[in-house]
Image 1 (cartoon, rainbow, N blue to C red):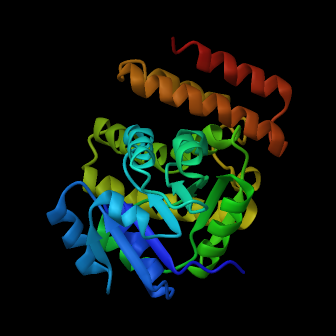
Image 2 (image 1 turned 180 degrees about the horizontal axis):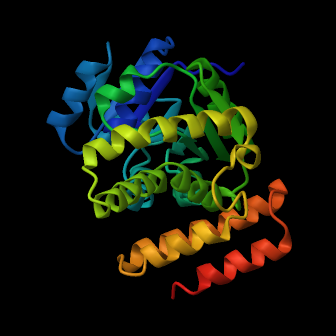
Length: 294
């Protein structure tokens, strides 16, 4: 197994600090944090035992593995500037942690420094530094890029106690879109459900107390049985009358709510078809009723 002895984290925010902390916990001896704001970089270094807070280029130049953990719109610029400063060692592995971008944005590190490049996305949410540091190992990472770089980062991820998976450059964007649907849009969906409860004159706190067990049990069912078997409700049982009541009740709701309900309902019709709980006639009738909302 490839063993990493030195790591540089460029941009020690929530994600970068959490990865640095996990690397120290896994026994990586040399950890260098590089950031534009010295005070923030030093504050992050205090959370990672033995980590050194340096200038960005100095941090990058001292490491075998360089992880660029800045915002997506800054990755290409940071990589280009560091490459022009010859901050990357020849043969060093340089990766960014964006879920949406592929390794192509790091090309200057290849052309100017002879680095090996990849993208490495840890699939989890980072609400705060404290929460990220407190998480146990077991995160799934999705990697693409130069084969040797992917091999090195895979070994690093396994050393953290996490799970590496290789994906293609072409699949990176749709992979990230799927992650957004599962995480960010789930949050939006819950907020929409609470808004609709309030429209029924139900207090928001009471609404969440009532919905929370339903949501968590549904997630458990999906985990145990998969989406098709876990699907219940009016569309799954071909209850056209109930769907019509929903359509009528939502006529005076905001357009965004109606659009979301229709989009989810139409997708649920497809899922119910796969489940085999409704026939084509029922699916067509329900879809037509949904179409009447606009």
